[in-house]
Image (cartoon, rainbow, N blue to C red; front, side, top):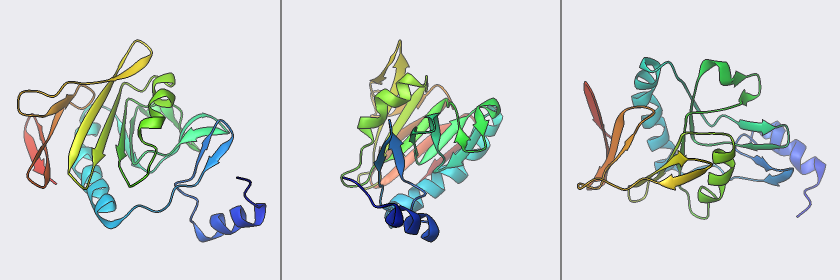
Length: 179
């Protein structure tokens, strides 16, 4: 669908374009996330920020991950090395977190992330909550099998993610959190 330039300009003026993505020159308009999504994303950012810093990683919220100027995605959380930072966002990442929303394109982004060499992608459905981890093997991001208790462990952050009741639980050496 062709979008009139004045509509795009109005979206920029109102700040509604912050989550929009360009997929090989094709605009994908992403609507604002709902309350549970935003609360979980903020909690993950605050909880995992200190963990990421211990590993020398930068964590940011809704930051563009670029292949080039007309090919980028805006994951919910991005964990990257300082040398991947750029004025427009990041040019590489070790871990991406995608929080699911109804009708979103989280899984369609996996090939893009793999092509950029993203080591892991964590997909979380806030409604469940449910969690899946994909790890780069060769040139593909493949699902990581859950452990006997249904959890998955990120090698990037050395954090285990699992669900219990209506909470997403995180454990790492020296800490834990229920979100």
